[in-house]
Amino acid sequence: MSFLLQCLSHTPLKGYVDPLPDVVDEAGRIVATLRAEVEAFDPEIVFLFAPDHYNGFFLDAMPQLCIGTSATSVGDYMTSPGPLDVPRDIAEACARHVVAADIDLAISYRMQVDHGFAQPLEEICGSLARYPVIPLFINSVAPPVISFRRARQFGEAVGEFARGLGKRTLIIGSGGLSHNPPGPQIAPAGPEGAERLPARRHDSPLHPLNPQWDEAFMANLARQDWAALDAYGNAAITAAAGASAHEVKTWVAANAAMNAATGGHYQVQSRYYRAIPEWIAGFAALTGVTA
Image (cartoon, rainbow, N blue to C red; front, side, top):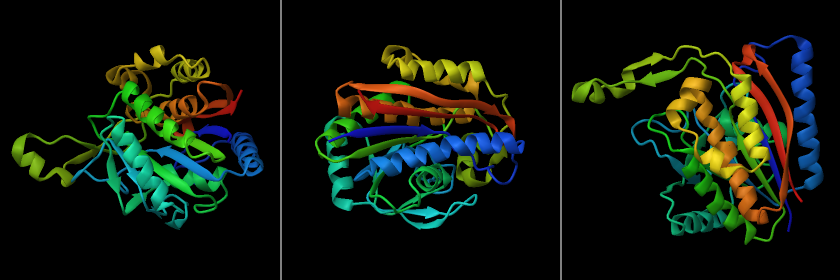
């Protein structure tokens, strides 16, 4: 039984609005390195924590946390459409374990996922369905959003379940870091506004990238400083790093899962960081291996 953790930023702007070629190549090399490590590890199961961007989850019923017992990629932003290889029996057993751990969890038997899930599967796993995968959604764009503490608890419950499987397990966190791309922001005005909710949207303003915040966050993960991570407040995250920086909760959950799965016996290495304004992202990679 062994575990590998890979956390990686995603961006829908790759191939649309790229930085200088040397920066694209630099980011491409780290992605290729992660992919080679995953291929050498050859996981038997993947647990993927990722967000959505109003492409698969909508405001008629927005869960904070959801596990998919089947899932299909919508194929946005150059990612492939099509099904993920989700082992339903394992996904259902994971859901039962998480709920038994007092985590309020939604279940989807027809989960639709976007580039937040598809990009890491294609970039570091090779394709959408190369490995069996359990898709784990964390709401990161539709207020109110959960806390870092709750993301940690969710990850811990998933990691406890993964430990009991006895499989070579890859855990992925997809998203972040500091960024706030233009996107729908919903602000209903009273009951009449709520009735027209899907139509009452405006694009959010851009928020400057914050390398200092990004690097401090990654350092807390590398130290496994759970008390410091639990202390992050949602309003402070938005103010310092942008509304979409809440995607880093996937990294918190993935690291907490790795921590629970290994009993804390793992080492974290920050592999890459660069603020890339063209991709509107603090673009980063982080790896965790069993100590």
